Every structure is written in C-alpha cells, then in structure tokens.
Image (cartoon, rainbow, N blue to C red; front, side):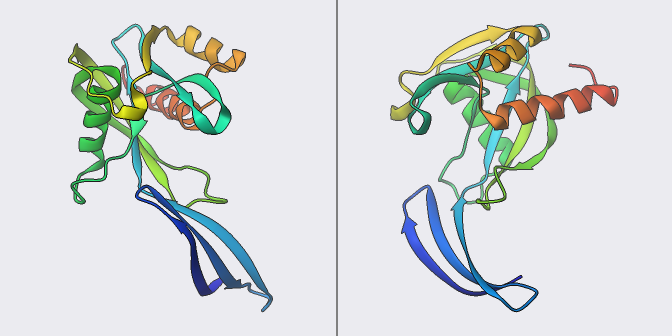
Length: 180
C-alpha cells in the first residue's frame, strides 16, 4: 500500500489524527484514519510475591480500573524507554526498582494507531514519594498476587489490554527460565 496524501485532522501535545489517502495493491484508492502518539513505557512492578497496580478513572470508558503503571513523557525528546519506565514507576506507584528486565515491545492497536509501548519488569522495589501529574491525583495503588490480578481481569476490574498483554510477555519470560 502506498500513501498518496496525508491530512492532519486533529493535533494536540499528546497525539495527532491523520487521514491518509492510499493506493492499494490493486490500484484502488482508499482512506485510513491513523492516530499517532508517543511511544510509552509500561512497568510490571513485582516484589517477589505481589504485583503493584494503580487504579484511576479513565475518562474514555467512564470507569475506575486497575492497570500497571504506564505512560510517556514529553521532555526531553531523547529520553530512553527505560528512563520513561523509571519515571512512571516513581510518579504513579511511588516505587523505584534496583533490577529491570526488558520484556518486549508491543503495538497499541496497530489497526488504527502507529503507537506502541515498551514493557519492563521492575524488581527489588523501594518506596519513594509519588510525583503524580494533575490528571493522576485520584490514582490509588494496590498490591495483588498473580491470582488476584487475573481475578481482576476476569471480573472486568482490569480491562487495559496493554496490562494484560504485558502479563502474557511476563509469562513467556518466565517460561524461558527467568525468575520473577
């Protein structure tokens, strides 16, 4: 598929929406609406027995839900994914980690978005003061066993596909013989 034209439909500091006119392989012409956003980091904080999750109100779905700490930062432009992960862990969960493992990279809905995220496992955790952003002031933290996390998923209290996919990456990492 070849892009013929791109029109920015909407743009703000965090994302943009484009409408792309494309030529398909058969020569026909069509449209794709694509959201573009910064890559982000998702952190699985694990203390050896329990996972540390955050719960917050997610405006698009109108509910408070549990998820792993995750996010992006605007500055500096050359910040590494590992640095973003450390910032998000401290900011949202009030934790620092002495050990980090890269579990993988996933796209966040590549049928409609160009964005993706890096998944990290954070171990050997220490508490630090939260540094939450204004939108995160109502965020809560909780600790859960793995069975309790899966129960949250089954009950619909954790519906974040990024968090569930990260759990799958963690399972694969463990299956290869890693310890966590």
